[in-house]
Amino acid sequence: MPFYQVDHICPLTVDERQSIATSITDLHCTAFDVPPSFIHVNFTKHENKADDGTYFLAAKSCANKSNCITAQVRTSNTRSKADWDRLAEDIETKWNEAVGIQGDKGEADDGSNESKELTMVVFTPIVTVREGGLAVPEPGKEAEWLEQQRLV
Image (cartoon, rainbow, N blue to C red):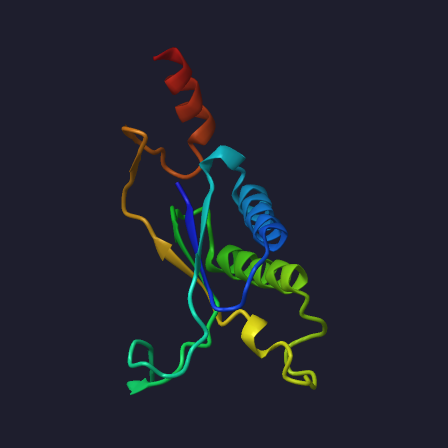
């Protein structure tokens, strides 16, 4: 099912990770009417270090200063680009709340938020997935699929 990978350079406490994971789960479930047990969230901490030749931007080696959330998700005709855009924006808002970023983008900042800013939220469509030895249902058919699994 949806797998959210949170790659971050800013230190996150257990409470901050819990807040972000809960927000992602709640937002995805609300947006697409799926059970929370379908949502996976994984965190990977990366070092905020000088340019070491492992991160590139515009084909130039630079220091990795990014926090990114990448999700592998099931898409369908019932899930529009506007739905995904709204979910991405809501996730960004919840990230900012969890890490303590105040104000809107574009406002004057003293630089204290730089390492905390979320660089991007990316959704990558899944063609198919097996989880726990089972083929997952098409979007919108979760309830029927869950009922069938109970009968097995």
